[in-house]
Image (cartoon, rainbow, N blue to C red; front, side, top):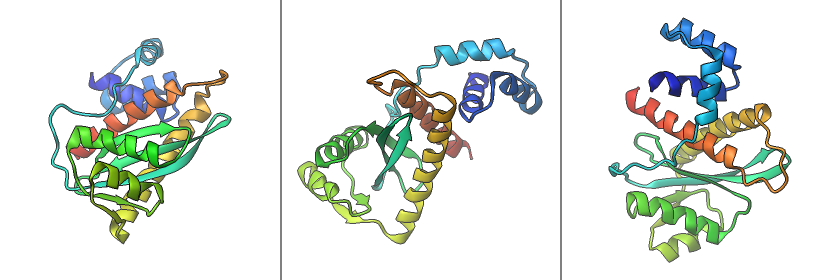
Length: 195
């Protein structure tokens, strides 16, 4: 299973299947053909990030950013935990408003319980937090630094992924981007646990 995760991660970073096969052989002494890696990619349907076991969460640091995916502009929403910097929740939407912020935060509350929310001061967060009964405050400089670095990292990786795997269908539901984000977040969180 580790070989598959590592291969998918390398592939989604932009390597060709042949280069991934070479990297697995060189880095991990695992011999796989580029065809088997291609088959893994075709079967890849990463699950949404959430665990049955609740993590210890002190607060949610939440932010959103605009991504260009193909011809469309979409909003990427991220919630991280400040202590271990794991990504607790992520979503992509085509709009940014209070109702979407509330839906995003309610998913995080459902998975991790009620905790204070730190945001960048966007006008859509205070009302969403009020409806959900959550304490809201604006980022401290440390929290702002953490979330901005995480957002920029994810934004760069996702835009690179879209450059290699554009989806050109009309009325795209962005399933390929959701799958990529789920895979990336799962891998990112595992790396933080084992680091």
